[in-house]
Amino acid sequence: MFAIKQNQKESIKKYFVLLCLLFAVTNMMAANNVLLQKADSAYNSYSGVVIDKKNGEKLPFAHISVVSTNISTVTNSEGEFLLKIPVSLIDGSIEINFIGYETLRVPINSLKEQKNKIGLTQLGFTLPEIDVLPNDALELVKRMLDERSKNYSGEDMLMNAFYREIIRKKNTPISISEAIVDIYKQSYNNYQQDKVSLFRSRKSTDYNKLDTVVFKLMGGPFNTLFIDVIKYPEYFLTWDNLNDYTFEYEGNERIDERLIYVVGFKQNAAIKDPLLYGKLYIDAQTYALAKADFDVNLQQPEVAAMLFIRKKPFNARVFATKAHYLIDYKLTDGKWRYSYSRVDLGLKIDWKKKFFNTYYNSSIEMAATNWKEKVDKSTFKNKTLIRPNVVLFDAISGFSDSDFWGEKNIIEPEKSIENAINKIQKQLKKSSK
Image (tube, rainbow, N blue to C red):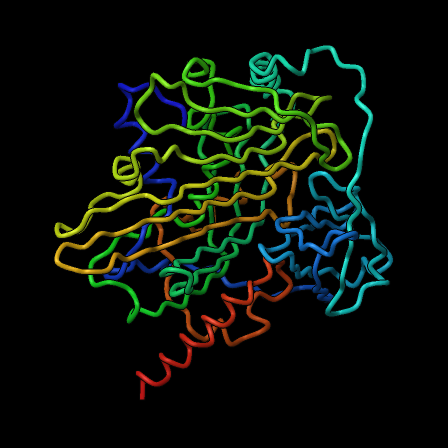
């Protein structure tokens, strides 16, 4: 319930407790039901980096897909990617998209297994004729809400996705969890909650660096799934809460060579409870929400922190330092689909009778890696579903197995994550001797 009136503060808390990444040390729940499957087709792996062709700047969260298929991934925060493609598609092409850049197609057979460097070119464009004035930001948002049922699929689908959650103490990763999940994506025209089944997961945590009493990590893949603000509009902008915000037209961008209106929004000054501010990226042709990038208002950091925690240590005050959200959609076959979402959360713990504060930064992200249409709902009945409050379990061996994920596509790990995993593995080996 992102955009809520003042008298609905408790509802905001309830949602954010489900949505956001909180921390834990003890009593980690085990996800006991893991469905392991073997890869049933040969594939090739390709890795590299996506950069700005002119200045060499790395492009994070760029979308990479295999043309004429539903296979896709995204680059990590360092612009790096890993893409697994069946050998049967060797004569095809991949497509790389990033906001403000020309879409690029690259033949698969021209790629190397490693160290591919793909440069994208920034583009300029000419404004087309439009039937809604772009400087009327509120009208654009209303049109976006009106066209929602037309722009997003009215059919149930099966989505395969890769999920990652990281807890950092200051800037050092101390807990890394990853999973591949199957998601029964309910039609955007109904209000039924999506269903999630765990395919495979792994987790590595340096418990020595976690404080004795911190916060409970809950929600797992549902954290990022609930950021699909088109599927769950009650958590974001609805007709009922438009008046809680002011909107401003901020210009145009290009996504996949499509003209995009950029609308900035922030909560009205009269509202004191922490709401949201950020940008909406609205497709000029369909008026679909193509992307949303927003933060929680942290003018009252201690009040905002209460949105994220169920309980706190009695001998500490907790302040939110960051609460950032990102959701991307991709146009496929005339419909917009969930593509990628991310949450970045920062908390400061001010301990009584301690000279130094403790800072935690967490990030969770999920990327759709494959889609199947016209799915029979009964095929999902035999899967073991996970609850919204599932916590991934420790699976140390997985991080040392380069083939752990098989043919499944994942988000390439960042260098800091790889280094942290190596350190954690060494510490665990020492402690087990």
